[in-house]
Image 1 (cartoon, rainbow, N blue to C red):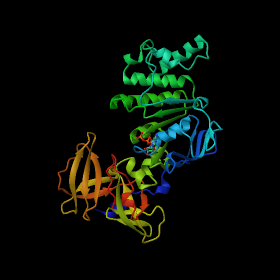
Image 2: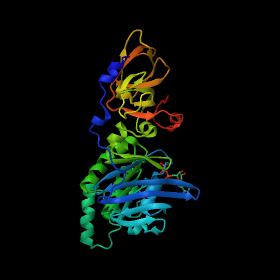
Image 3: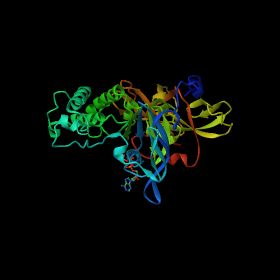
Amino acid sequence: MNGSDTGEQLVKNEETALATAEPTSNGSAVLELRDVSCAYEATRPAVEDISFSVQQGEILCLLGPSGCGKTTILRAIAGFERVTTGTITLSGRLVSSRDTLVPTEQRHIGMVFQEYALFPHLRVDKNIAFGLNHLSRPQQRAIVGDLLALTGLRGLEHRYPHELSGGQQQRVALARALALRPVLLLLDEPFSNLDPDMASRMRQDLHALLRQTKTTAILVTHDHDEAFSMADHVAVLNRGRLEQFDTPEAIYHLPTTPFVADFVGQADFVSGVVDNHVVTTELGDFPNTQKLATGTKVVVMIRPDDIHIVPTKGANARIVARQFKGSENVYTIRLASGQIVHSSESSLSIYQAGTAIALRVVATHTVLFPQSPESPAEPESHDGNASIP
Ligand SMILES: Nc1ncnc2c1ncn2[C@@H]1O[C@H](COP(=O)(O)OP(=O)(O)OP(=O)(O)O)[C@@H](O)[C@H]1O
């Protein structure tokens, strides 16, 4: 392992082009939440002090583990839940506060939920036209025709919901929501009932459709890949609190908490000590991007794709295990100290367990967190595989 290898190839955070986002804005926001809390039980808030805004035409993803409060926020925006503190403003109008609850039907919000909720006795075209009774027949036909084309449902307009696949039913639910030209479209885990291939296709189609119709949307998911591929901004929630609101790129590369770092991808956390301009760790030196005082103890977040294996006789680190993932091999590595880190290598790079290796670290963004007695416990268990010293 070579400390200078590590240090030379690093780029300071200040030099990156990553744009970070403001969670609130007083610009022309379609939706603005300010210090919103909701509680199902008087003593225990389900979500607390949530503030963010969504601009016209933007897609926001609410991302977090089960029970973190995603659906509660969506329901509060829709007007199904009261807020106990804070305000929700929609198109400049106060719709929720402690003393205000504008009814759902006056909020001009479209909704698509996991179970689609189509009318089983109505054909596809009638399902889509359901909310359009105030318009003339020719107007209704024109809107339905446009949406059938946009959602790829042409030819299926005379079928009943039970005669459609899950993906097709979901398109009908989308078309029905868009027919009313909502100021905001809310989607609660809309792909969770679809198989992975169909979900991936639907994500791309939905993204194109929202862009084409300039629809402002909020999508709830616990899948960070889904959030990254769909969103302009991602709000990461943990235990009812907003941990970070940012662009997908900044959430991945510049997470502001160990929880976010761990939740949005595999991450390892290596102990280090600040020595002037660098942080010295067992993996080499990293830039002291936060200008911390010499002697400060920190943990450095490192992703597996930043760590590369160099088989080296006599080196102190060892390969413990290999996990084949199709497009990559993820290696579990034990450093001389016993610390475990991970390395992502190409699917054809195969090394045996026990191989002595050096590590080349090419971290493009250095993320430092304070080392505290609490930090090891912060991330909760989920898909990620982080190990924190
Ligand atoms: N109707 C309810 N009554 C009491 N507590 C509730 C109710 N609905 C949700 N909660 C609680 O509020 C918290 C947030 O739940 P919420 O459904 O918003 O989370 P979520 O992130 O959407 O979860 P999931 O991904 O599993 O749907 C959880 O602790 C949950 O147990």
